[in-house]
Length: 335
Ligand code: NAD
Ligand code: UFG
Image (cartoon, rainbow, N blue to C red):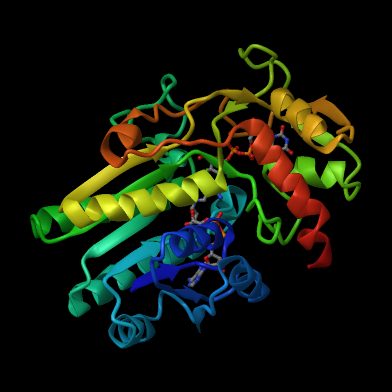
């Protein structure tokens, strides 16, 4: 049985769908600080299964210990965390508490229960302002904000744990690039609680008429069209990467560190055009000043994941946009 912390969230819910597709049993632990319980009903419609949910906090060691024991957990996928860069600058303690202390609590409970397999949500943010792209896993790690520091600290503690008990742990650090998209069913997707910070949900809300226009942050970067360039990965491809990592850990003890990205650079304006094609609706935009702290361009070298996990992405930008549009115009409107 797999424990999915943060399984009601954006990436967690899609990973639950991918686990069900592979017939892998799991339970979800979530405190709903950034998601809603209704996600699990929609997930049940996708999977045709009743899901087991434990409402609670990953920082609650007694609860986590009980869940590990009572559900016979053998592996954990750890999504529960906070992810807003700006908020992490304003309230760093909150980020270190959830993302670092939460991971310490979870790993301590796991060790006590003899559960030694964990797949962890890290981020390309650990590379900070990269020297060049595509980025390989051995690139310098130099995060630029408390959120990034908290992810790097969690990565570091996994490495130290592996070193302290060689061969005892099976730990994967998955560095996601920019997750976007929604489930092909249109039933689950990204559901920002406030004004979206990220490009894709903002574009979707402009296309849907909820927001007037997109502010494109910077038109004078040293990129082909002057706008920022990223590696957008469909959340269902990302979800399947977690299943591949779990399978890898079944056969390999130790520490795995891989980028999960497509390796394809895409600019803001390319994404806007792709969304217009997918939706058939214009996405008005205006080029404004650069967003402080933004990097001009970065994308993944996805070769390690392909080589070790036998995993690569299969959904392109057009599919990412089509799936977001289906979600935005359907279930998302009813929430
Ligand atoms: P999300 O906010 O949609 O999902 C996180 C889930 O964890 C939510 O359901 C939330 O309620 C839950 N949660 C948060 N704190 C908790 C706690 N203390 N106890 C129990 N549950 C808690 O975010 P997401 O986009 O699905 O991200 C999942 C993970 O991936 C996070 O750790 C995030 O930092 C990481 N990540 C996300 C991105 C991205 O752009 N979405 C990129 C890189 C890494
Ligand atoms: N952008 C706009 N307008 C918007 C929003 C974004 O032009 O309204 C641009 C940004 O300037 C950037 C690109 O769209 O060029 C992507 O921006 P996102 O905010 O979607 O993603 P980021 O790459 O800036 O940030 C993401 C995650 C962070 C993580 C970071 C590094 O959201 O949590 O990747 O991995 F820290």
